[in-house]
Length: 344
Image (cartoon, rainbow, N blue to C red; front, side, top):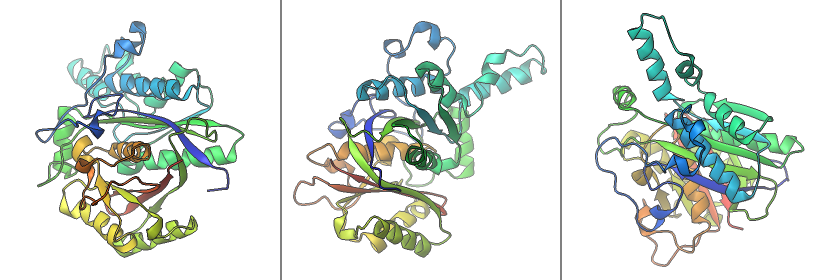
């Protein structure tokens, strides 16, 4: 990243935990079973009824999250919208395909088709916020959010702009849950529940009222654990930091041993004595879950104490108030994402 500082001005989430709030810090919801849908707010409290009738579920969540993020930051509209999604508008896609089968490819209504594409989410946010600027969607499985964040940071560094909305959104229907189980993405022994995610952030050059500072982020390819550890070491060095400077690691461990092995190797190699927290036991697994991990990292930098129920490693003997948080994510042990966040 260039010398221009970037900040997270505001953040919001809709997930398996109570929506648009941070109850999970004190009294997290317990998710039973292998699959659960997100807890939705009353959308009528956030969106006009006329708009709700034309929106699928993931669009309602995305626009609601974006509206909250902008309102909390005191910004009328972003100058760019960058979204990550693994599956896009799943319910609308299913309705479109179901109608296609039932009607023999005749008399198809256009709404579900128009809302079935992945970039519909970013488009809906743009329409709602009257943003006519840069608008792009990344769909790359579990690093979709990380690529969106990376692109938004690069865009802000290269343009005379101040704000960019960054988010990730995925809904998982019961049908798609079955498919994801067959793929081996969820439903493995010991793995957390499959869930849904909607998280958004205002990335800004303006420090006013910011949640934290984004020191740097990267997405890289590494075919072995050793190569990934070397990339992480280079990432820390590029920002003039060592393991001693990192107070906390936010890890995407989900209970599936082959998946978690990459995180364990990274932590042991680069940050062997740094406490680790895990967010997926609370928020579940899906292609946009990493956005909720980033959300957790941002919120923890605002807190005086890291809640004991988040720790994946031994709970520190004294309360932890982190200054630097290292966020880790990977997809299929080959695509890795790192981010550094700093308390203001």
